[in-house]
Amino acid sequence: MKIYQHHAWPSTVDEAIAIQEQLRNQVITSDRLQEPVQYVAGVDMGFEADGTISRAAVAVLSFPDLQIIETSLAHRPTTFPYIPGFLSFREIPAVLDALEKVKTIPDLILCDGQGIAHPRRFGIASHLGLLVDIPTIGVAKSLLIGKHEELPETRGNWRSLIHQGEIIGAVLRSRTGVKPLYISSGHRISLPTAIDYVLRCTPKYRLPETTRIADKLASAR
Image (tube, rainbow, N blue to C red; front, side, top):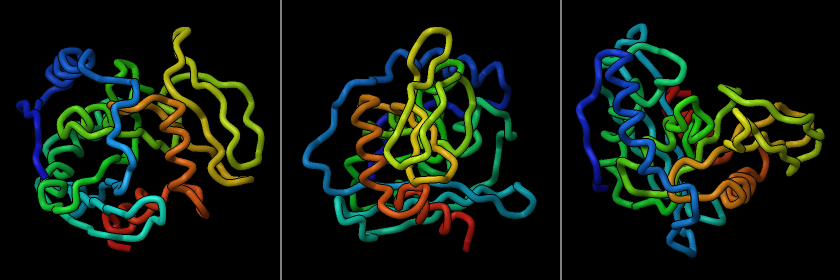
């Protein structure tokens, strides 16, 4: 798989902020998908050797039946610390290594993290989508920023996630009675379309099958 855009990886927070500010205006939050979507992918990360080695996993599934087509793993030294809001600089280098091994090019990638639901509107899903030029969705397990109204307990309900007067994503109940997911556009996809695809990729569990499978690979479970 081809990586379309490259940049130097920062060593400081100030350098990372400069990259986010430079690239954020290139993010597209309208639908630019190749349809029909035939392949969806999940990416996730694990760490080895007390966090010094990054272990990236990619799982490519057929859509809409969600059968595993291909998986890949990549390892590389971890070069950026864990700092909320800067996840992409810690994780994307290894994720790109894993994606380069994939022969089946996904039409859509679901990321374990934020898209534009981010202080600078440039979370890991937006960053990755821009580098690989593939539509991406942020599917986070926890809230980074924003507020929302109370969410009903039944599957499929969602409420807008709002930050500084702007709708930046949605809090989505992917399974009745379990904690919600925080969905946001990554790149080349609108929020309503992102919610639709997340639900279609989540037939049984809280997490989409894409990221659930990638998580198992990344964690060696």
